[in-house]
Image: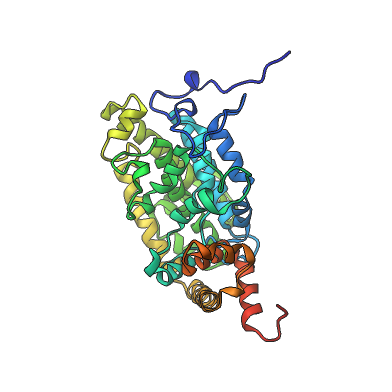
Length: 381
C-alpha cells in the first residue's frame, strides 16, 4: 500500500522558519492529521469559511457595483498570498503558514474598505473601537460557526499571532497570550510586506483602468518612468494598455526581489539561525533597501494625492459612511432589527459590539440593499 506523502519540513525549510511540528498549538487541542500539516489545515479552514467567501463582494478601492474589472478584497487577498508564497520559497520560509496568514489577514474587513473601518471605529469608541485586524481574530476565534466542538476555526497560535501582530495592528495593545515582547515568526512579517507590495502596485493598475490616473500622470513617478522606458525599448509599438500590465508586473517583481535580497542579507548580519533568534530581535529582519524605500514613499504620496483623494473615490467614501452610520444607528436603537443569531449574543456582549460584528460581516451590496430595506418605504423588507 502506497503511503501519503508528508511535507518534509526539516529538509526543505531554512533553520529560522516556523515549523508546524513545533507549533504552540490550538486553544482547543486536536489530533494531528495523518498527512496534512497543522498550517495546511489552517489554510483550508480559512478558505472554506463564510467570511472568506464574503471577501468577493467587499471593496478594495472601488465599490463592487462600480465595475467588474477592479480588485475586490478577495482578489487582493489572493494577490497578497501569491506574492508572499514567492518570497517565502526564495527565503526558505514556511509557505503553508505564509499562505494561511495571507488568506486570513483581511477576514475582518468591513464593507466599503477602510472607509467602513474608520466609521465603525468612530461609532464604537466607548466599547473599544474597531480594527479590521482584531476583527479578523474575532472572526476566526468566535464568529465563524463551523465546528461542533468549539466556536471559530480553532487555528494555530502562529496564524492567530500573524493577525494580532500585523504591522498596522501593533498600535493596539497585544493580548498577553501572544507574548507582546516577542517578535512574530518571519512568515507573519512577510505577509505584511506582501500586503504593501500588492496594494501599492494594483492600486496604480486599477487607477489607470478607471481613468482616474492617466499615462501622463503616472510618468511623473520615477519608477514608472524608468520601467516604461525599458518596456518601450523592448516591445516597440506595443499599446499603452499592454505596457501597463507588463510594467505593473515588473514593479511587483522588483519589489519582491529587493525584499528577498535585502532580508537575506539582514538575516546574515543579525546572525539569525532559528525561530528563537527571530523572536528575540527588536526590529523585523525583513525590509527593503534604502533605494526602494524611497521609491515606495514616492509611490504612496502619489497615490494619496492623485488617486485616493479623487472626487469619485471621495464621493463613494461619503456615501459609504452614511450607509454604515445609518445602519448602525438603526440597529442600536432597535436591536430587534438584527437577525436571531446576532440578537442571541446580546445576552453576553454589548449591543454596539454585536452590531459592529454584524455590519463588518456584510458585503458592499448587502449593506446597500439592507440600507434600502430599512430606509426606503417602497422597498420590501
